[in-house]
Length: 288
Image 1 (cartoon, rainbow, N blue to C red):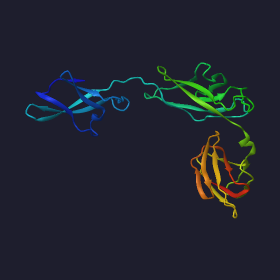
Image 2: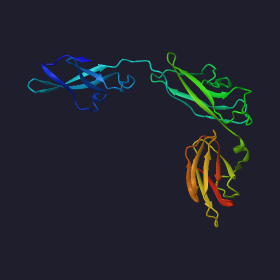
Image 3: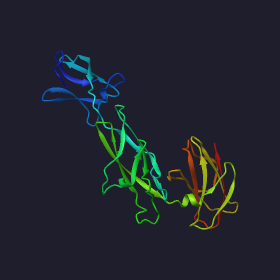
Image 4: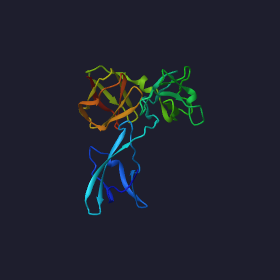
């Protein structure tokens, strides 16, 4: 926006930025003797938040008298593409045909209805194995399954999704990793509030325990090293999607320590390891 001289003014500057103006978005530059108000590099107005912006300019005349002028600048609406594209699951379990991976989500600045579809099959993606059902749920196609003896078991699948608001289309890639079902098959089921005793026989041994949680439940852990044992233990939590979170890298004792809040419904797994041989311990989980 170019500004002609106001009442004999010879210079212009922005007033201090405050809650009543949008001066933080703009700057005044002089181009060939003309003062111009422009957006700062890297900044943009947002029609969805404000349909116009107020700019306060201080003009100084030849006598040094300063006068503040308010400008109201209209913001033109632009149809923007979808944002914050996400997938709430990323793990495949071995041997389960047609399993659900998760749901896609995204936001549209204009509040338009969004549609999700997989991009065309290509060498760079594995979309031929997957499909979207119920509008946004990603799953393996019926009959498609993963087996641990496949040569590319340790390489993630790449799924490419296209999100459209009817005018704009945004593309995003997601990696789908593989989880061997050894965790599920080896897990010992725990009962809420019941203490159990375990022992790590050597550094290659891993103890795995399972507990089922409902939506919004919290989980606390009580853990104690053996009375005559100074070994430390590494403890991890694995969620229903196979995502693993380290609770403690080296620990001797925990007393009713929160390890999960506001859970999603499903089976959760506790994994316990130790570098020491014959490291015994007691473990109790409390669900709230």
